Length: 474
Image (cartoon, rainbow, N blue to C red; front, side):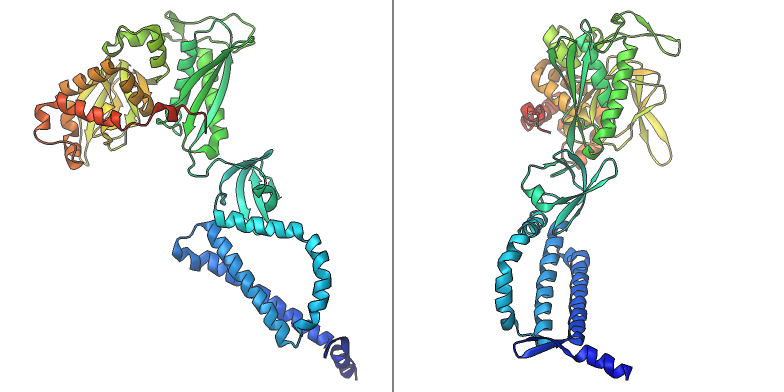
């Protein structure tokens, strides 16, 4: 008896609509079928985005957009088929839908705008999952882009859900749009009376000591102005990992603070009187006495840089930095690409050729000599491993600054060419690599100076303008 009552409850007409009347059982069946269509559409979306469309090498955003459109289209078709199959007369509902259409349109216009914006974001691919962006007061990484909203994970670990229409209608800074390269700016203000070139040394040393800082474009130091509280400097450092810019800026600040303290250069607002070391002797933190001469006093002693006026000396100091190597330190491994030009200020560096069985020293660069120009200019790897034979101090010039130095100082370029031609043993170490790349013929070794000068002209002729390096975009 209870079973009959339950059957009547589910099969009794609830709502007549035209020629069709609907029961509770019919409603349950329709809901289950619609749920099945929705689950099938979601599964299809995951299959298309995760597997099928990967075969066509489409970007992630476009895979998501195509899969979403296909699944939505098939879901809509499935809903219509279910309604027609269950005997629902769509024409009978046209009047009701028409009456509700205006109200629903006003109520869901924001949702429609977000859906349209979501498809735009996914199809254009200007913003992708994993990009580091700055949006209003929010900075972080895009974790998810869906049809309605975008999820941004901040550096503090919070996740912010932003409607897509808010992103498409506002400027968004994408720090990893074309690549992960970007520029980190570090501002430093030192007290009046400080040596500007000594401050420049400190900033460039800090930048070139970081492995993620690029050699081209090279780091650059600018003296922004002489303010009331002190002299305002800014360090520009290009990095290949802009997503780690906060860590890089922190490391630079640590190194800059240490460098300024070692040279007794005080930040603006310090209480004690400034004491510059200049050319006198300084006491190291471990109690040992060491000689320290600023680059402005050391570099003019080298034949390449003699008879330099104050302006060119300032440009030279601003192109590179000092680097100290304890004895036994490996500076460059055999086969590594060249990133910098090295001038030996003191000490010595051995060039060692390594094989599977033995390591053999080929030659040594002592104080006043330089190396690294051939890997930079010829785009060939180092044929030897460079190791500090003793405690050594180098003047390191990154590749971008080195090319600029060659272009602006013809006498320096000529000195480099003559030195390369004179060092036949160094040229021979590069001979096999140069022949493999078609950069050397048998006749070239008979006139190495002429050969290197021709190569130097080609490199400088194809070098991009420095204006692109010094641009403030970044």
